[in-house]
Image (cartoon, rainbow, N blue to C red; front, top):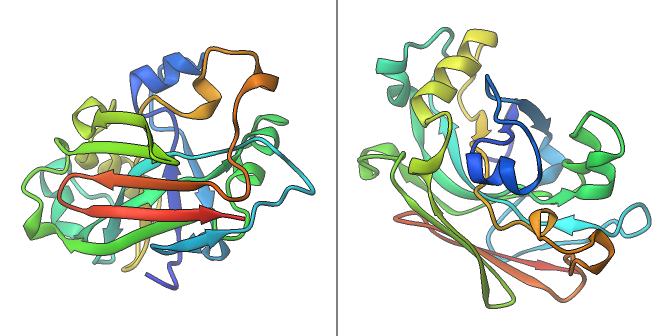
Length: 216
């Protein structure tokens, strides 16, 4: 997964996450993009661009990796076009993300799309829509949910994305994050403890392993 043609991300795909940040429940999956410069791996380091923002956040997500060139895939056949699944962390610079209506600036700094620790073949994951998902920041549990809470499940996301564009082998789809992000904390924004140099975030998804990232 080193040269994906597309890194597609879904926003607000858990009702409780949308609620915690005051966003409406979407009628269709909100899509945005990351780019190959954002790719990172397990035990990777993210050099935070503190010259342009200071509100850095984590988002643990189930990642889908495509195996086939496909277009207009029916929901019933959707999982068959995947190579497998991985843990992802959609790292976000919230100031850049929210200064305009477009998310891309806050999502695609170098290293902002860690994926790992490995790609798990789809035949080893009986139901990607029922996987426990957790996030720890410096050892403190921050997110604890399940992919069964997604508004749009994996089959629906694949159907939707492939109805818009042709997907190629190696393309990547981040499926959204549950509640528990720093942005959603019920304290004044200036009092939130954003990610900074020296922090460590561990993202875990049932059956897929743990993705560990350090920040500098």
